[in-house]
Image (cartoon, rainbow, N blue to C red; front, side, top):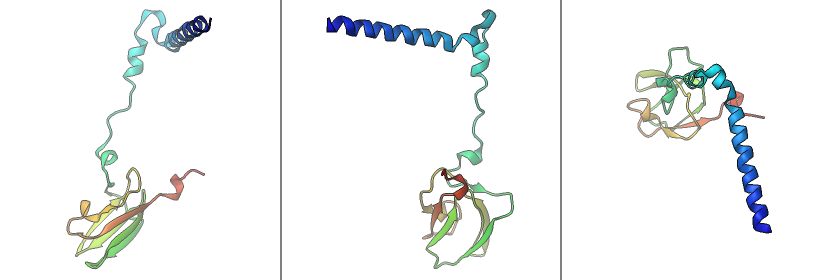
Length: 130
């Protein structure tokens, strides 16, 4: 008896799933046309180079702040999505820290000659839920 009930429940579940699936795509099969193909082609375009950058990207806008580092500097504290002008060794770079997550990384990954300096990234307060 228990086995028959389990089988009936399984058949009912499969039937409901199949019925739900057929209704889900009904709008794409109107009048015998391939509307579902147009739905698929509406997918998002490929990401830009800036969106794929691990540590952010060189900025074209003005910096939110300017930081001068010396050869003795050991760390740089920034906020995610912040644009900073970094001065080190007579060179300067304007960088936007638009990155996924807040893991620390070596500054030398984005600024040549910045050996031994670690970038610590904090979450942008405007991005935090609450």
